[in-house]
Image (cartoon, rainbow, N blue to C red; front, side, top):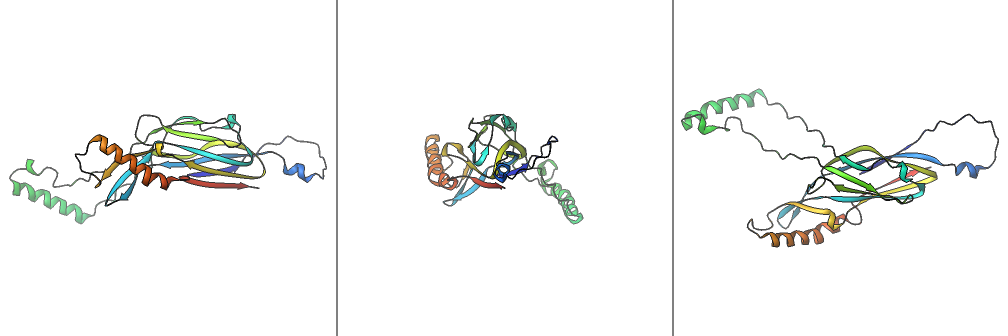
Length: 239
């Protein structure tokens, strides 16, 4: 998670020149800061007892704790349904001429060894299976509190977990009095965590009920302590 604050440049109307010596009044003048949010959701593998588990989150809460600042409800931009963005795939490196010549020679040799071209389908140019990561849609709601607002992120299309990124989207406009501090935390509970895969931990013919019990124990005793008190935290200071 990354939270960026940018001061808002307001066009000031031309006013008559007034000389004042009240420095405290100047310090208490209300200013504004635009808050932009970037956050990444993905699954993650974790080694466990000679095997491993893959997990993600299906919901979570972004909480802001403000000092000398307020976030009016009408200033909040990140509300509603949003499609998460997948990072761009890196282009595959081109094969060298030597690798191409080796593939051609193997594709020519294997049919003669097997007696027919049909028996060697796929051997001449081996394919590598890749796991495609599909982006999900996130439903975002917010509380009405102005001093310590909260945004709730939830998977919106029935997928097991959230996958994809939010990249530098305007969260809200903050009214501040200098100096201001903003503490942002992204928090999840055990009900937000979901196991999506497991390897080497139980036999393949295990019953659904036993597997469900083991998954709940893993979430409660292994994953939840790693995610407390928060999944991510950041502070902003202004003035």
